[in-house]
Image (cartoon, rainbow, N blue to C red; front, side, top):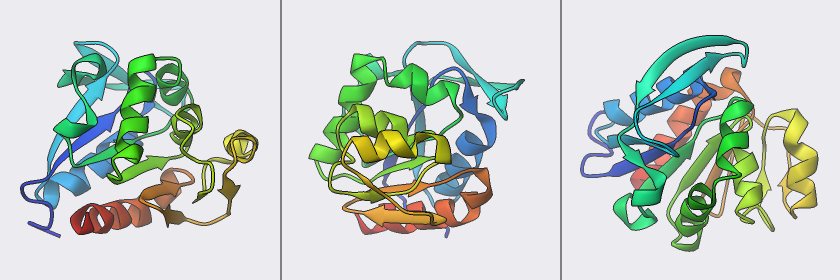
Length: 181
């Protein structure tokens, strides 16, 4: 994996309540592949991660606020899950616009677990096949997406996975997809 993503800059869009492992493992895989990875959030300072939406875990330093960046600043985007994180993101106009701009620019986007909630809010699942955590599948269908029960799915530049158990396949896929972009 080393070097595949050198000279690539990736945004990880996350807010308070992000599932720790879904932030840490993709970021580590991307960095090991040579990408520069920045944590982008709705506010400055730090965000609070969680384990299983219940226990507080590590805090992470925010590199940039979503209101101060654009899709043109990055080559790809990752949206981790957890229930709280994407729920916070999907009510933030800047975060929703940031995601929509990546898809409109045909830059690769990846979301895991509840992360696709912001894809629904950005109206970018219509006509795409995706997977997600089971509890948001009705939202995806109502937004015009087709939901499948698979470990990882990529359709038209958007990669999705179901939950933390899928992280090995998700991380491998996003490195490959981001390298091809």
